[in-house]
Image (cartoon, rainbow, N blue to C red; front, side):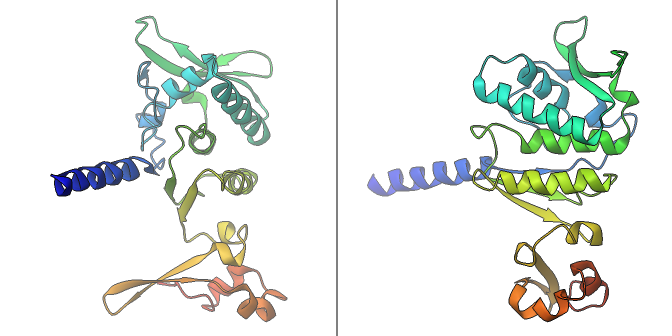
Length: 233
């Protein structure tokens, strides 16, 4: 019996750990993309991998009486204002059926628009910011994001990196990228180069001290382009 109990405890721990990991994939921003869809208003506990319940998450955050949710809403609103000043307010709105919610927004003249009027890059940035401003209670312990730079304005990309660093005490964030622009926003010790060797993958964290002579004259993107860092096709 003790052995059975031990296995049960380990299984529960493993399940809990897996549930604290999420991978966000917000590449699809087309007219019928999950990010642009209506969401069930009740689907507001965790942001889904494809962002299909983005409107529900924002609606819950906007109207919550919880201090941590209110703080998350204020943080998100501030970030959106910094990358898209023309968005005066995000306005997640209940549909007439009372069971689904859509993502509307207002401009500086208080004209209301639907999610279809958001550019691909702006919508993707809102989704990324929403994921990373989740309260600590619901924030995954590990977040992976593939090619976060897609469609983002350089200012939005820089802000994203600042946000990731600010959440370091609450979660780890793993970005997969081949973007020189993103590389230049990172410190060398934040970069892990992946190489394929003998049929397997190897992982090497950059050594800032070893690269210092190079970095006196070149950016990380320059060293990547020159093949100094590795990771090239």
